[in-house]
Image 1 (cartoon, rainbow, N blue to C red):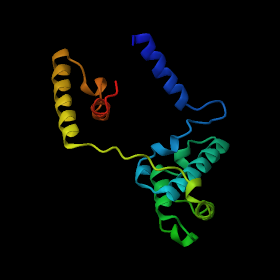
Image 2: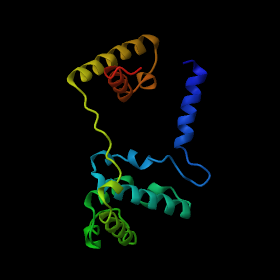
Image 3: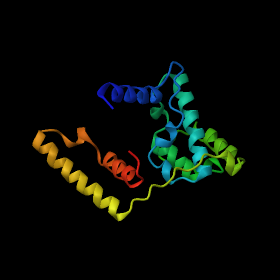
Image 4: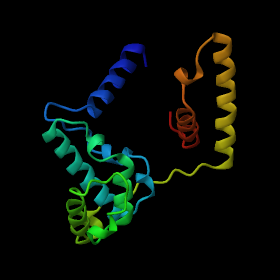
Length: 173
């Protein structure tokens, strides 16, 4: 792959995840909220519903979505699956005016069947050999970056190195 192809691929990925004219974002952006990986199917459905509600509301008010309801609060509400307003009243940072809407969303999610809820992400199991290989590759990359006077963080992150090791373990290019 030459530089032009790599750049086109990266730009395509960025365009896919950037908002369009209507403010819509990539279809699975809600999954990238920190903590979403620990939720079961019903809680993921609530997370998605709250995320969509927050995005629409932010668009209507012309404000950043995270200023209306922080990501950590979205996860906390999804974890609790509230049945009544009192289940959320003690959460610091949650606006009282939002609580009835959040409880109503949780009640709607309870009515969903499991097949109507999103699938949880597949857990990627790292074997001890993969952990060691990632560490060695990271050390080698660090040495090369020092010799070439490059910042290692600009070349590859640890998660990218792990992805390479994982792909190699699955015989993917």
